[in-house]
Image (cartoon, rainbow, N blue to C red; front, side, top):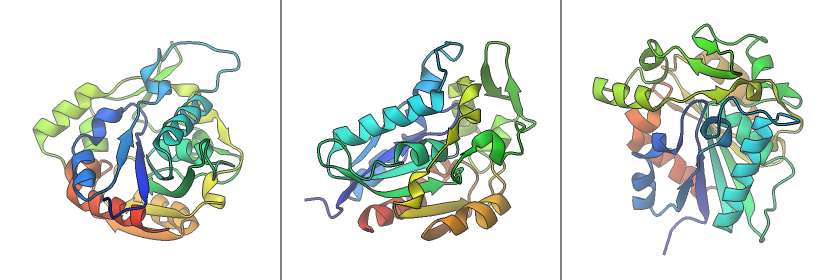
Length: 244
């Protein structure tokens, strides 16, 4: 019988997919934590597709709500990087899920944690990071020659090469969509700072986002501890799953 009372749904960041959690998932299950992942449609659908209105962040949030509802019971959402925007929107007004489940906690893993009415682009000063390429088809992609340094700085070289090869374009308009009422304003939250992060400055994490969370933890890790420090991250997420 599982010692935890909540399932953990892992929500990846920009340009990534469920593949990025491959090292973490078995470690959580070994700790008795029910865990699930998903691929966000803003990355894994056609990045150049058009819809009216075009709201890929909302599409991602809807996919998260559907995945969480399928788990049943209490669910902890863990959002990495851009995934913090997704879980903030997914959990807005959604403390109770279809079928009687509920969001028990939001975990922000070196993630964007927006205020009401903020977009990711607004948080970044209304301009993308210099290592992000905006493409003619409406998608965005990081500079792949810098991705190992930016995302996987404390990973070994084979892991860096493998991870960079899995990066995919994402619909850039997702970064301009606002979160009207972020779920962390109603639901308990944890912020996991990564102090060696080269993608989201640790000072931004520590001074702006972390004070919004009820609980704060810190890893001496780069932007992707699920690859470089999966054991340490598994311990922190297991703690979050046990915490009401």
